[in-house]
Length: 347
Image (cartoon, rainbow, N blue to C red):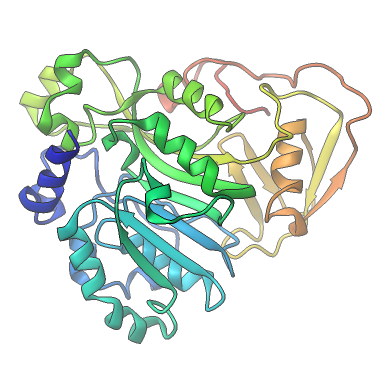
């Protein structure tokens, strides 16, 4: 399957127009990011096959790893955001994609000044980061954009991500998920796999996989249902539903399996670019500036033990436990279930 994927993205696809479905498609970027994306080389943009927007906040000076970096769009955008003291490494297994990314380093150096001097592209497999010399606890953030579904060993990918992240680090990524487990006849189809559908994980299998890999309490940031424009493919996959979703996973030993209530709260003081008035941790936590915001113990740790801590005031401790945080459930978290008591994260 890896050979099929390399052939599909290296030889069969020459631009995003060659895709047969809309599973891999661009999303509208926030205003603060548009000037940066406008400076990306057209060929790099034309070979972009992401399904979400992997541009987390508070990136100055960060070391970031991009899994399945392709033609380098996200690497170059992030290189402008981390600044001269930061560094971005892109890993991809497709020589043709890497050739496009590397061909435009001088162009982006001229566009961003220091950018492209703080980037590096490595050819290899995201399941075997150790073979590329990427050390334990060496990255602040790992990102990925519609690539993990293409991996035949997703368990290995998440374990490698956990290994290379620093304590308090974050895995922030977008991917395609399904509302059920697909039969082998669909999962092993080369076209469906290349279109990011055959390898899509059933959402609950993903949550359990993340927890087994050390990422307790995965947080859904945003999601959208995916349409399939190709009638023949849509008929083969029916009645399964697919979603593009962005998750953030934190490497924090202090996280518990569920959202426990210790009577805590936080106050956001603003100051994060693009999020000064409201900080969005995930789909259940839109924290307004200056407002006392009750949180569970896990959310408290996700803010206190990470790069976000300096922007918050923390109220309470872990002396008294009040039980499970209200409204924490385990139904499918995506928008199709919006009327149900869904959850995964608290509040």
